[in-house]
Image (cartoon, rainbow, N blue to C red; front, side):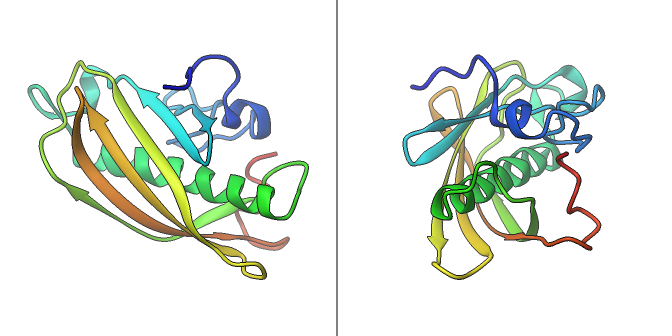
Length: 160
């Protein structure tokens, strides 16, 4: 497994972001940290007590946020690589879904692997697949569609 220490993609490309899920500058947020691992992105996360839905089990909305933000970064990096850009374009979520397959336990490390599955040559959209594991078991799977936004979109400068 790739090391999930050192400077993350979020800290490298969006250090001032305030996004609840992935913003390094949001002290009240989840502050996920995504790293390259070959053709995939990998993140690990240790939930806090306030992330529980009920004792011992992580809230599904927290799981959705983790997967949404990590999937979004996977799409942005795929577009950056495809177009040989010096930094990732700002992308936003067009749609995503998460299937909760089993309870995700509190107090254990969560890992999410994500990979782009549809990066067409001239499109600004990327399809992404995600898998969340805890204690060696798949707890959730998801898919998302993410789109690069242009100047004028409210999220365009959110990473700078």
